Image 1 (cartoon, one colour):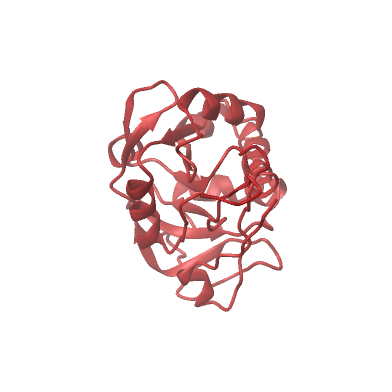
Image 2 (cartoon, rainbow, N blue to C red; image 1 turned 60 degrees about the vertical axis):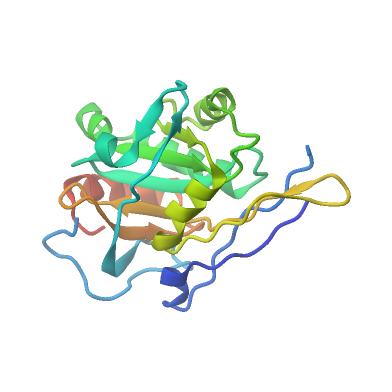
Length: 219
């Protein structure tokens, strides 16, 4: 088992260090938008970006085996985006399960508006079928799961300030998968990323903030 720490450029600028998953053994700017970075790793609060990030122009394969165009499918919808992998021993399942618990507390109308998108950083092992089963196990039966070409995925993550590295097979047979572990929230008002959640964000935090994000307001 190996774990690496990867800091995102956008969050490193706020003097924060973020955790990333390691190896596995089995081979909208709202009306009250802020101009400063708020919250952070200690509290698990949303970090409000001074400069919003463009949503990636990304077309990958969904868990139904069909092509999924991120821009088209999430246009005008509040969206949470997370890059991770299903063999992750800790951060990825915890993050997705926390979001899943929060989403279940939302009224049906709000749940139908929200899109939660999981993009694999280990696409060679993360098949559509495996991702669907894994997301369902985290409580994300309505979550979108995407896999595809690694270079395409890495290129989409980079402008967001999320650094991922190509999975590496170690001498002992384990596989190291290193990636930034942030959830980025995109506003339905302009389809841009305004909010970041670190690994310390709890299910309660997401439950409190999601109604505002769905409306395109700062948490």
